[in-house]
Length: 388
Image 1 (tube, rainbow, N blue to C red):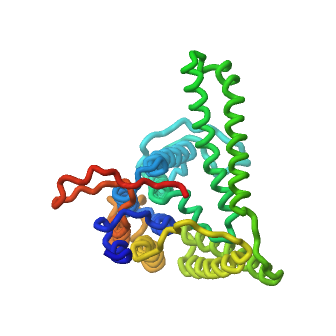
Image 2: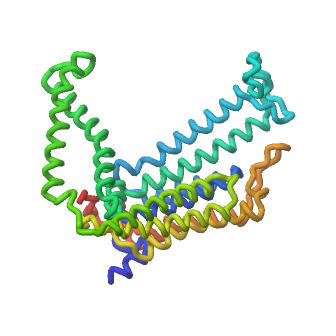
Image 3: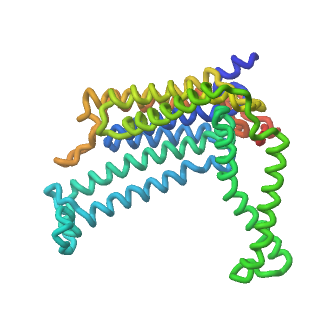
């Protein structure tokens, strides 16, 4: 079996890591689709699709548990959004659920009410709006569960190499510090010393700081031995052109993403800005990357599965942006008057396309799939991810 054939066979292919950029494109596409609707059924479908893909393709790694954390964070967001609406009610609607004691406010706070009647319409609207944010958080959590942070940073363009290294160090500082604290506490417990309280804390500070300094020295030596900071000969004109295109690309991408995520912005504005920013950013990265002298060890391939994963996330984003322009009423959860939410067919079908990522993406290493034709899988463990 050739490598190209193995890449295209999904579960039946040899396990390998999917390119992390493909997972992020897929997740951001779902988040863009979620930002364009307040229909609770469509949003619930987005969460279900993201959860199903995560359950099929998440690796056995500590960072793969992010989806559940982001789901719980989304529940907190919905509760806070509804709580603010209950306390600072707008009085919209006719179905009063409860009447809270109203606190009189000064004249300079006109338009703001504290307490008073709480209607079912405003509570439901707040719940729908909070569900939009919770769904977007679930999409980001899915990307964090599926894409390895180290591999994502290894895919950073050469022009952003120094920034990528700084981000890696920053992201690994907190986990390493927690590990050092646990190690020191375990050592104190084995020696019969207290591992809790102020006395234990004062006795653990120096060993933890010593371990952090040792890691810093080792990291500096490793970076120096690998030629960190070397630059290639590039003319001043090329440097200026690369910096200008990078600045234009960042501004265009930020404005385009904001326009796409903001439901009040027409889709005809966000897509051109995003496309212009992406083209300018890629050109700037190519020019600025000439200064960086960098090699990659075993880079992740971008093959047919990566294209399919990214495309399955782009389809719902483009579809819901178009529907929000042509028929925005179909994407709004009805709150006034109160009505059972409907499920628009075209947006639901577009969101369901994103579930293909759980089928076309390669199976990550470390996950054993039991098939009907092979009821007794091999007992030999599959290779795990090793940091390069």
